[in-house]
Length: 274
Image (cartoon, rainbow, N blue to C red; front, side):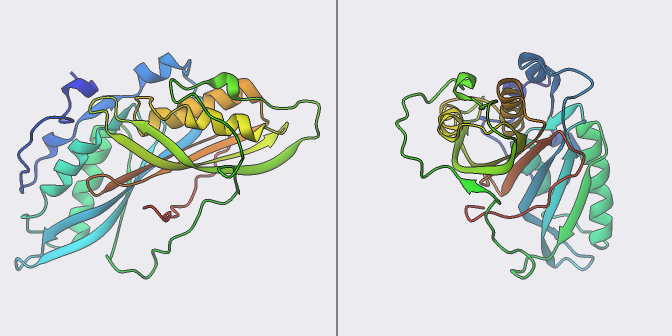
């Protein structure tokens, strides 16, 4: 079965060092989307951007090669890929000889697209500092607000309030205080989030309380971002909205979901904690 409980998460695992596409464990998006009222056609566009920092293989003469990889899984794909299975799969290339990086790229494109159920984009880059600058998410940081907080889960959408009596604004609000937990292992997932919207001004203190209320909530990264998008749309009624979360890495992978009313997709700006 393709449910989190049947995935490799939380289980003792032998880390194979040979290629095995059967290690990839897809989980349908549909169940969690039904829970928050998301149906076809989707109310958002988006992508899940994965970065891999522990990718290695052997060249044709047996010398190890290392690289960074970026994977883009479209939000329209029927499945997410469970992160531990993704790590196990990538580790399987460590003792595999490849003609060149193009040969590896072809395999990654094929296998990941099959697991996600939709075309996945893959890019490989050299593991050097140049070209990988660290930057903050654009926007106004709300974390410095002097507010009392008592709720840490489940998420409290009623904290979200927009003042329809005020002129329309366009702004980006950012928090580094997002934390949620793996629904299987309970391990914490730490992240930063950007809420970019056009509409009635959103109460910043309420938004901060809402984001902190994910602190003891159990959901995968992609599901948390979709929940935030749906809650903000329903409670604040913005004309335009995008939600972008940048999570810290675990096991050499970070996951960065983006959901938006617009069709333009984001860059891949590495944060200070990534």
